[in-house]
Length: 320
Ligand code: CP
Ligand code: NVA
Image (cartoon, rainbow, N blue to C red):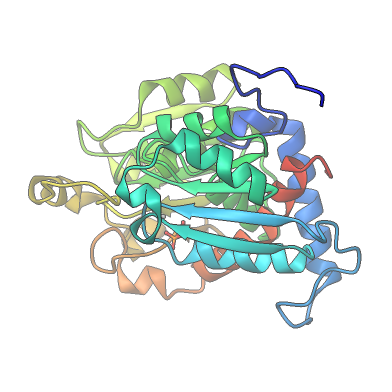
């Protein structure tokens, strides 16, 4: 009998998508093109029917959730069906993760049972640990630090509305959170500009501002919502209170002047789109009028989670 050597450390063999920089600008451009082509080619088909080439036939995606989700969960599920593969869902509350089993062991077990792992969690260090120990690609389905899958869907939505990314003026209102961090990362890679209006003390991490600027993006940080909105191509916001945040009373008060209202939208370009990753809190970060307006593209954006993630899955598995 042959005794094989034991490896002391796991070496990832796969392409991880923990942040947009893992892919880079060219790969994101390829994802956006592939997503548009696949979306067009299957227009009008039943949602669960596989694409003609079924490129991930036989592949299994394990989705691990340590936080709630509607869109990420549903869109990855339908994305895998359309690519010809299937999914398994591991909720922390009903799995051994919820009883303290380590991320490292979970990564090594799931690598034997699935071809790709998606994780939604709180601390970004947990997804880095998952990627370190997994032997299959790991995709970030949201952490406290970033939400890269959302931003590929947002860029797809912007392009579909007829706007090119280089030179685009995107305006963000409210909390400097995980979604904004991934927007800033995208700005440096895809060469668009970001105006950010937040209350003092709620700015994004400077690391992401620096990353955008290093990539050639112009980034404006202001406490004046009207300054950020003037002439914008895209107006975007998100919940003022992200999952897991506490002591919210003071924060809600500080955020009040940053609600996206018809008056704010009127300062943007007439053809500006309104985006929101959802779930929305009407009357907090956005008014009902804007959310339900012609300029609101929030449900196209939600659908595009499917199309964007198909391309992310193809990139992670080395097929794009
Ligand atoms: N936008 C987003 O990630 O939605 P879910 O939290 O419902 O997955
Ligand atoms: N910033 C939000 C995004 C939800 C999709 C959160 O982290 O809760």
